[in-house]
Image (cartoon, rainbow, N blue to C red; front, side, top):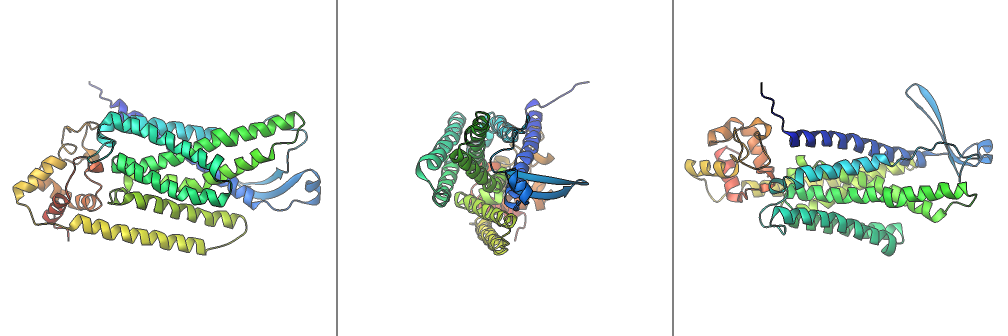
Length: 394
């Protein structure tokens, strides 16, 4: 008996599974503590005398919980404090490992593409590392040196993310570009924890242990970075789901649509934070939903126009040539495209009739420009339109 195991595929699967689990823990903690902090009410007189600034009562899992937040610290200090940091660290580390295994090791299949700044796999990997490091450096420069107010930080972050998106789509294959925007934002979030939040908390505890007043400025900065992380979670999730978002990253100006959708997601998050603070403003969700629908319509109209514009039908032999050039490399019984050992989704496309057999799925993939993956084979618009015409797409 012969046992065949694709180690790289299984390692990527295991890492992706762990990455999702860690991400749930991190995002869950972020959502919970922002909700908790914004939901605290004025404590009773007795608890106020004990130094508690806010309290909350909750029921969950068959029990009632009493939560209180101290103005500074309890006396005596508890022996054990839980530090919320490994949720962030494990998410970023596993995500980085996935980036290396999927996009760096298989950079010729996933990271490079035609007419991009990064012309070779090695150059694309180097560009990816520099892109993420530079994005973090500029973010820290904005936060520490340039923008002293929350309003100015927001005002600078929006064009900064647009710039990051433009650079990513000019440098990397489209799907990898959208993921890199998310990776840059996630790196900023993890750095907020590692460089600001945890050091501030350590300084807070150390000052108490020395009998000194805690550093208020550092605590304020930590709270600010934590709030930023809360708003960045939905934009990062949007980008991390990019495998299923060819209708976004396949667009001619996807570099504008990605930050636009991210901004809508962050604004929708603002509704919940306002609600937790007792300010019910449903118009935020209405505006966010309307903006989302508007973006979808703009995206769909342009994608449909690009996908179905044809200069004329091709002969059957020419259609077979398109299939051979753009489909069979991956979708063959034994793929020749690097990075594939089996055909994706088990679909084999060798002849035009193979496309007809799975017409619905093929038409959707062509119209949304999901396939060829990242347009690695440089399928031209007239070739795409010819296949759609051959398959009877209206």
